[in-house]
Length: 204
Length: 329
Image (tube, rainbow over all chains, first blue to last red; front, side):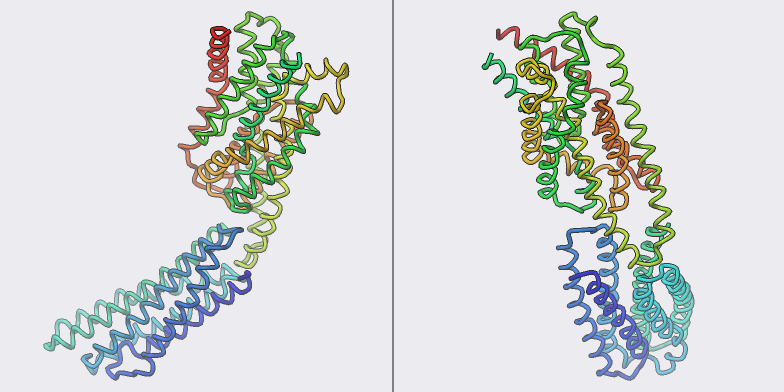
């Protein structure tokens, strides 16, 4: 695999992140189970695993400049973690979302929007880092702001339902999905941090 | 006479193996993964032979015949060669980069003192040599610091994204090879003198001339046996030094190599024996400071202690081997 092919593989992963994030944002807090979208997310994760394995083989056998390969290998692991979490969330949606409170979606919409936006930002940042560290940094900082917002307000919404809900099943489903959302945001932020570190390392 | 030449030459070649085993020239290339260990020792071996056979003659004259007016007996020369060889082999097996120059000069001076021939020592030459041991690491540090700062400026000006990083690091990785080869050539010239210096006056005397193919034969053989030492034992020191002082990228490794090449090439062409080891290590430090990289101070401390202690260890080894030889004989 040459440098161009390696870059194309990362672009492929960036597209998977963007697409996966959009799908997850549509299903994560929806009380209606959409099996088609759930299966699409699981397919994305499998595709991601294949690309990951190809890149891992490439990094393991690369002889020159592995100094750069180490950073990219870290980024690859973070991306893989995100896709794995998308798949885990899709499976959780299949089991628990029918128990979600029917009026919950509107209150928690800002979290699903944040997942979609930050996934797209990360996908774009992974591509743009090849031509501009500065532009990638701007996108990454946007992800951090979104995540901070989600952490603070998401807990308020969940706590609010805890106080008012009498149905333990509803609350349990809500709590599980909210936790998945927080984990996704944290993983996207962690991937963004790798890009941030690369930018700082290479240009100071 | 033939037996004497044979024994002396054999011992010189043992010393050449020891010197080759402690050659750390290719450490930056291995540390930055531009070359594998096998590639490094093979390439290094070839270049060392060429350097030793050509430029080595100029350096050899300084250590061999210009350091002292004392004329050593066969036994005394054998003791010097054996002492230095033993110390270097021991250091190599422990992965320590010892200075062959420090070892050789320390042993030669020790022998003069043991024999009570301190008056024969040419103090002006010794002072010149000792001064270069202090000056060359300083120059190595400063040179590497300046070069690294220039490299960082270049990176900041030209690197916008990862594509630029790939291009520039690959360019430096290829440039590193050139710099490493130049350094290895200079080191071959510099270090071969430490093993064959006592032979040069002998071969000159037999040939009846100061320079001829026969007079240069020790250099050619010395270079060859240095290559053997590097290939068989030298890899330990290379891996230790390349990986245990500071993390290297191709750009930082180039700064190290260019600074080292400049200092060692200039010194070899002027006939000044310097410690290539300490030029290289000080270049690592110069680059690390300029790049604000983390330095493994434990390794630096170990090398610093061995640098200061090497001439004394060489003197002590010479003393021991000399008295052992007297007991046996």
